[in-house]
Image (cartoon, rainbow, N blue to C red):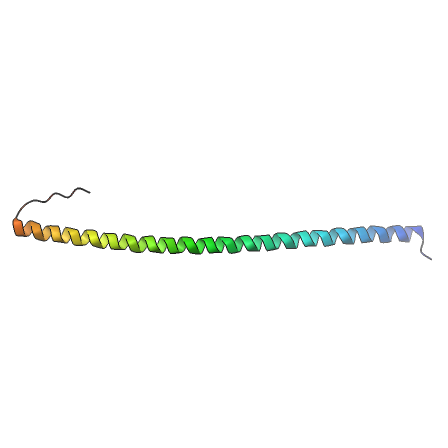
Length: 88
């Protein structure tokens, strides 16, 4: 036969066990949320890297176009022996 003290300790133990289980469930939920956030950040990072790469390519094309225009202007300047002023 269990004494009142043993019954009381069992109740306390059961409550503590439930509290720990609830805490563990909450932590696991937080961990899953953090994982989802990390995946979202990774996805966003990939998008930004792709946009950066696209902008770098576009910038390089524009630099090349400017170089070609300057080359052509220099050829025309030599051909017509006139001064061409560049406004940038």
